[in-house]
Image 1: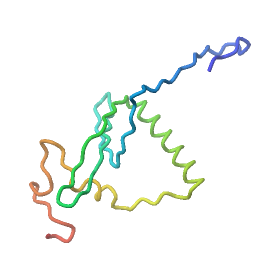
Image 2: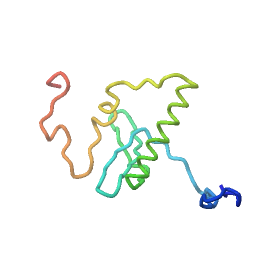
Image 3: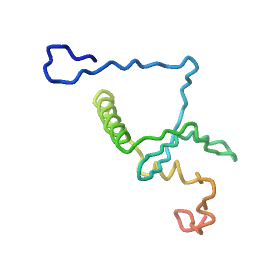
Image 4: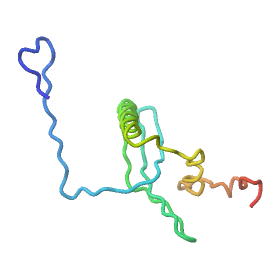
Amino acid sequence: MTASPSSGSQPQRSQIRLEYPPNLTAQYVNATLLFQSTSEIIFDFVQILALPNASRARVQSRVVMTPTNAKMLLKALADAIAKYESAHGEIQVPPTLADQLFRSVRLPDSEGPEEQGEQGEAGHE
């Protein structure tokens, strides 16, 4: 958006032209892993494939942002979800969604529940 010359003391803003590369492809993801440092928020967008006897999770994309930009994304997502819910009704999220999605996901070089001695919800499997 460009400010008009009669706008007084407001700084002039230039337009940003958004370009999409011709080979851009959409990635379906159904989980996100988040990490942070003092200067970055890292989003790993993951696709979990639940197959009989062969479930797996693959990172489809990684996005790194400053904490300020991540907070602006949080606000934009909250606004978009509010608009969606006002048009389509409240999105119902099961209380154990994170457990369902991440129970079997292990990061490289980390111990899973089996190695840590954790047991199933009933205390044994």
